Length: 210
Image (tube, rainbow, N blue to C red; front, side):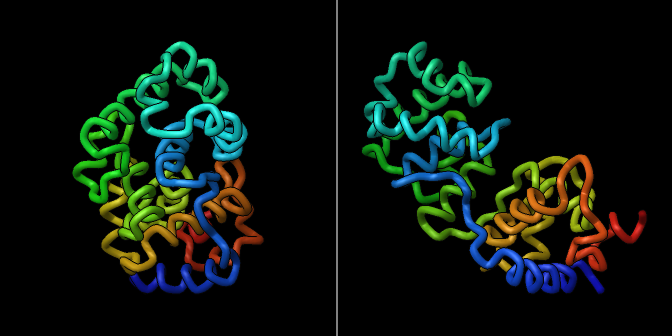
């Protein structure tokens, strides 16, 4: 069974296990998703959702973030970690959104990647969630599981993204990554994967080699 065939079988099982899999960041509009995704770097989505409950009451638009006092914003997001860099990037990102895009999110990867603090993971997630543009979102779960399963041998997120694009059906790119997140949290965790109770263990290199 080649990698493409394995992915199809894994998707069938994941569709049974995680039919409701979706982005776990809570947001009401596109800008909030963009900011939350930036805050989620090296931080759990659960922690980000706690922080943004108050954050999005205080800052309601790209203009609000663009005009924020950096020291104050740092304190508002401190518990997400790397808060100085995140605050600087969020302000810079929103200034560019206001100046160039009338406060709206660009609808293509090239322009998204010009925004401060926005890498490929953030751009692909936001473009899919906001505009329905297919993208492979490589977070820590997708990186770990795609290596364990044997879908890639690469460690760099961008290379993993390209590897998964070749073997995952395009219409399932983002959905497959959301399901990897769910499976990574529930079964295939970083320290001790529960291989014996894993429904895809027969399709996984890690299980078959151990």
